[in-house]
Length: 309
Image (tube, rainbow, N blue to C red; front, top):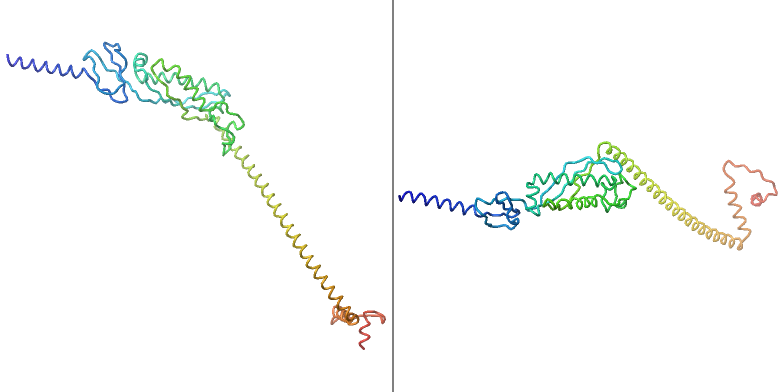
């Protein structure tokens, strides 16, 4: 009898411990739970971390993420308003804000990803179809002044919205749908925008043409600056040469004037000697070793030779 009582007591204690153990649960950080009883939710979702109580056996804990989750869509080939096809790779961040509504309408994160696929893919396709290619590949703050290497596509087109504004519109439009699933869409971003092969070839051709145009402009500017510098150098050279020639003529003029004055002073002192000296200079410059002169007897040039006999 005592053995039976002892075994029964051990079983009762074990059952009580198990009941007590199943009567509470620990909620970690970053998680939230919905308590269900016979498949139906009981109360509001529990979001505070720590120890919490529930009815053992009858109530179940359904755990959901509270942190921000990532949605990555598959790259899609989408036509723009100007009939140009591009590959778009979109990513978004979302979180469960109403765990009870999420469990009732979605239940699992895998199902939530599928719902977000439908919502975001449709919204992206709709907005891309309504905008030209330049709006998808340019940011809203783009301007020709910000370009440093040319503009391969849509160089002269003005950006009305831009890629970031379109992403914002996608977020705003999709955010109106997701709350019915207990989901908050945090943001939407373009992860990658790429041209299809046929468009890439045209873009590369335009990029090459643009680089050639920029190179021609640079060369033209260089030739213009070269001509300006050479013109300035030639002008300065002519000014320097003209100034030097003028100064040389002034010096020569002064020297000639001084020489003329010396000659005049010498002539005034002794005219006959001056004439005789100048005559000798003339003979020296005229008569050489193999020179023969034929002079008339009344020639002025013969006068000093005749007088020297």
